[in-house]
Length: 129
Image 1 (cartoon, rainbow, N blue to C red):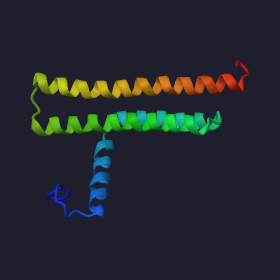
Image 2: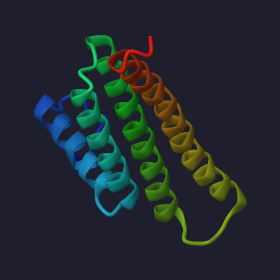
Image 3: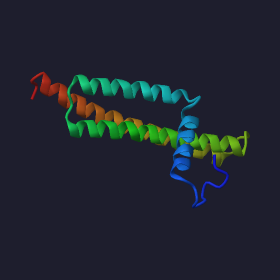
Image 4: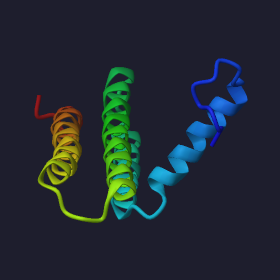
């Protein structure tokens, strides 16, 4: 990480390097990411098999990105909490629980959107409507 991440002299290469290091740190050691990546791969495969349209692809990919972003923010909160203390504090625990809830809400929303997109596409392919 750059010693002064807010320095205006930082190059774009440095900024992107920091971002990719953050992505690596956020993904590394998080079993949740393996689950999210597996589900994302299944969604992409299913979308390709069902030949979803452009707007449907956009919705599905936006949902996948939203879940991964929520998981990264949650990982950042967990990392910061561990840097502060290993003791249990109610406010810190609440913050971590809220971060987990954000991932849950994003995942449930994505599941609803995926169900609507795939249900509609499947219904059209099977001649239900």
